[in-house]
Image: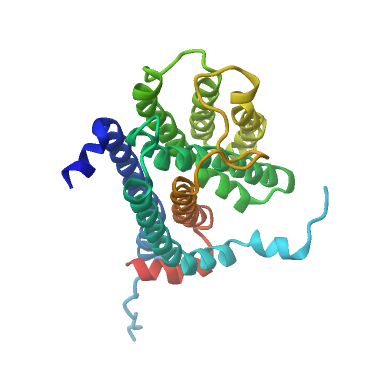
Length: 62
Length: 250
């Protein structure tokens, strides 16, 4: 295992390259998911506000 | 302008594409994860160390897929923007918009992992004036320029049309990057796989690379679908068909 982690003496290079790749891909996943969900949530919110409230029934006074 | 076949119009219909994306997204995501994990295991564990570069060559398994996606992403973005410009298809512009930040991030990765690989291999992280490196950096600026240009317009239709011109003109950079290692003498090595000859890499090293390229491409597709769905919702926010999707997130 430690031999694997040592990467034949190239550990700093190999693991930093893989680490940065992992971070960028995870950031991509997070921002892309947010880009999909945010507009839907906004839409749901504005739909709530636009929904007409039930009007109290007006009775005619005789 | 030129006519388009009927099947094409289905692909230009936002509700149709949105529903397809909704259905495919989970499968794409799962497949991307499995493929990347398999490719990483193959690249880090199964592939033998290089006779010259030792284990440092394993950076190839993240560097080449990123570089490949940086070029493929830009080409797709330019084609989508071009289709949107010529046939005035809004969905095509939405595809281009969705690709830009993802393509930029993989271009960044290609530059950074290349630099890290260059240090033990060439003795330097970066070489100003090296054709391959310079044109790849220009590619990053093209992506960022496309996004900055869009952001400078209030009106989305205008942003679509003007940014499409930049995207299409910039695509000349893609073949320049690809052939830069043959046209100029550069530090960067010549092509390993994408050439007419047989690949100059042994199969134990090549197989994980092909798996990684496939995995990165699936991941790219998953990312684009997510952003595209968001972009469609923003552009179609008045449409009735969107309501049930909006109900679902509440």
